[in-house]
Image (cartoon, rainbow, N blue to C red; front, side):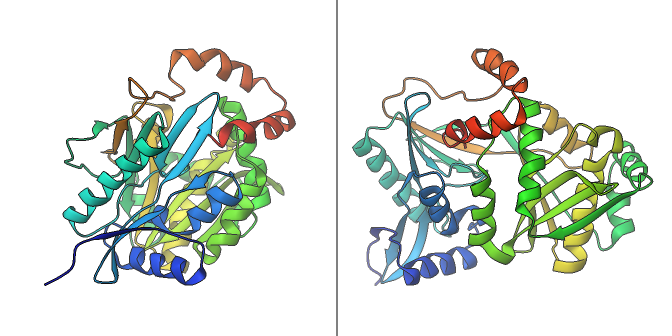
Length: 348
């Protein structure tokens, strides 16, 4: 007879972190965003309090749930699995364990008296205690066997854009240059009216995740015009923070960048799947990803309201943020890089 589940909070001992990651590695529902490295990121870079909980049975880990507490005067008091990540929630091969940890999360949310609890599942859950909100979709595809097959799998119009980019004297490199990735990304998101993270965040991602993280940078006449920081896990590549300068549109260097990332991931890392991440439904990014031939898969974010009376809406499409977004687009890049990290740490 097996014992009942017990509940623990993950500490900072190396052996405990390794044990957590070993479980995530072998769990079918364990994603890159369940790894213990995110505990280090949120504590060291963003100074948030983590509550990474796990369930044990007969001394073995049977489920994990990374949770992070965010507390802000502007954006409220929340408990999220996991901020700065597209996926979260409980990772376990047992539905009973998932319910057990989901119930423990509610107890913690009530104890902390947060506004709400959010679990970012990429699949549907059946737990009546939570309210589901599907406002984002994920995109992805199996990566074909070689460069020509990758190009052929893309929709006709987007394929033409890639072919155009291949004639624009663009070059690319894959390395650990997070500084360049940050410079390009920070200008790109300023242009969208979004506060950027700190440069130290990009550096920490590289340091903590090591070989599971790299940067592909596209250059034109020796100048970086597009760059993307990507994660690698379980045979997948996840282009996570990418962007381009103003001239990227004419050069089609972002199209070139994602195509070359697929080719590089397949040839050098034997990666089988391209995870294009999440986008707000019907947004510009949502429509762009569909041009690659990828169909949206709804993300099932689950909420439990504690002090809040309605589901949160931090979307840039929210009318109350329109003035702020338009103002942010006009800031000098240097100013946006200075102010942005004070706001973005609560917007992940």
